[in-house]
Length: 387
Image (tube, rainbow, N blue to C red):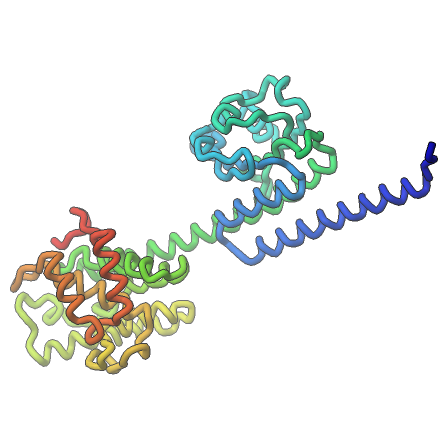
């Protein structure tokens, strides 16, 4: 019979522990880098679930967030073998009726090795996921002492039990996630306030020019549709939408006799109206963070053939955001009623946009407009149609 060498066995166990510790540290560092590189709350949640499964070697992970108004928990993120959209219908009271609810109530972590014998086990989750929960670790997510949600690791791989080390790891991860989610929410709230302020400013322009009521909203929607069909990133789509909201802000500087005239403009009046992109640029040029957006506002009347204004730019000299807004703005202008003419129907306006492809409008933008028009009807809904 072969005799074991105690020193060798101890050395092996020590090496395995060191390797596991290194892997945990690398995972936590990698996750920290992700948190420091994004304010996208959905990305944070997704990566947190993945990190939970890797760190704790669990079959799945779930995250609940707090609904403060109803004092409930709701499923927000699910990964692994427990993943199913049906779980998102579940809401849990913050009380002793469920494990997650108990963790939220007492803000204290739980590690349960035999969930089936636990009175607080929420059977409905297993029924919806078609997975039997054997064991789990559930920890509160706290940011600045405020409960953000509950993070759970479910079923350690290989029918093994969770360890105290697993609980501590998940607590560390949950703390990072809670802070990241809180920061993302603060950023989103700030961004929403900014958008609301900009929208209010744009609404003031619509109110000043009573014949274009709703114009800004429609142009923003049409621009967003075109940008999406051009394959723009989420950030680029947001920039296009914001540029569209602000595209006519310069009309603040146009005198009412011209802006509100009930008849076609004379040549001299038209020259005054053509100054509105420059007025808008001067208003917002000092805001460095809006450079791309102000370019969209300033150059949305430029044309690829060089016959636009204010600078007579050609082709790709015109920023993409401006080329997109140009199509959306013209489409809505053609389909909107004026005191001196009736707006065109959508199909006639569509044909006119296509006819000007490559001259008044950028070819690639028109191609995306065609797709958006066919697939979305460019938002042809009662609430968005020209008045």
